[in-house]
Image 1 (cartoon, rainbow, N blue to C red):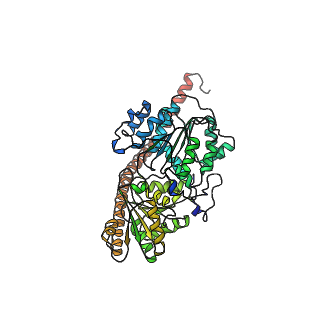
Image 2 (image 1 turned 45 degrees about the vertical axis):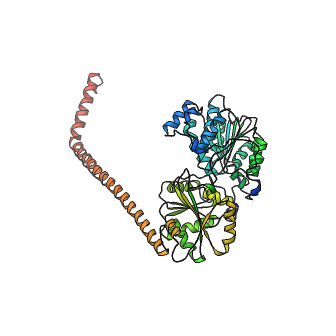
Image 3 (image 1 turned 30 degrees about the horizontal axis):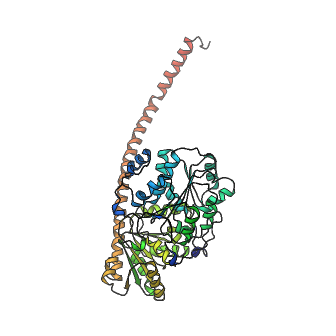
Length: 511
């Protein structure tokens, strides 16, 4: 599985022709946002105290939820699951990380488990996602509950072997989690048909539009028989309205959480710097304690910035579509487990990635559009946690960045970075000036090294215990070997005498 390049990445890598290739990232005019003529049911998250047992889910699914320690649904789940279980078409607006995967996934699994038989090559449910990483993430989130009700799932996306996906489809897959391009390729090869699909879900619809995938989505949805449709998106804009009107029948709309620009636990900062300060500020912000996602525009910039951060003593690695899936998975795991300070990535590489505890988003390269800004910002301040979004702004970028922030609908504090930081910037970075930043980074690295020393000491202690055990085992084996050498001839003689007696008793002795 590989992540598809953004248009800005196109100059540095060839797109995967077997899967999606983003072509259009033109933003919809702001005047058309939120234009829907559907039944609306806005839920106040503070009023949602429902338990999963009250939503009508099968007992096996609620038991699996309980085993995982999930007792109270998120607002989007409490709002949409009853309607989805009732078979209604659902239109939901919710940010990535708000719990929407279970909101559409659990009702879909419940419907499939209620009855029906899946024929080879004919899945009964599909979930479309814009990126391969998100497809795997969705499948991982639903796997436990699919196992609980006996539903077979398979991820279908580029960057993985066709043969395995084809074998799974021929054996019979109940639910496909797919990217549009790979699913379309499998259909054109005659290895998959959508004529038995009962439930179709479109996840991150706005990202589908931004990445130019709507023609592929429409091509797939045109092949679906009558059935239930669910569409989830972080924003509801004109392109999404086209899909709603064309494919959803009398949908109920649920909008339960604010956009990234309205999250009250998120602060926004514009760091107005000179060209010579850019590398220093990048290392300063990325090297602070906590998890930081660093955004740049191209794959070449990912590699360059990651190298520069490591040279500056920041534990950082890059993530982009030019890496193998195995390498990307390892980097993500290290970042999620807190073994990295910073993850440097492009916009598309980070789409759909949910990492808990990211407390800083840093735009080294300002985003192209206000929608890109909000998508990047949405990586932090999740589920009520606090977070900060900082953008490095060079003098020639001032006007365009101020305009972009205004279109994004956020209030950003402006900091003129010079020798001594203003009080708010000092609090944000935990330092008073550049020298203090270097000291703080040195302290942070010392803490990391000390933790690594303790880890290695524990490993050394375990190895010493192994050494003692192995020495004792070697001594025991040598004693056994000595006994065998001494007792060996006597044992062989007794064994030979016994064999002769047995032959004599059977009358088989030699004459």
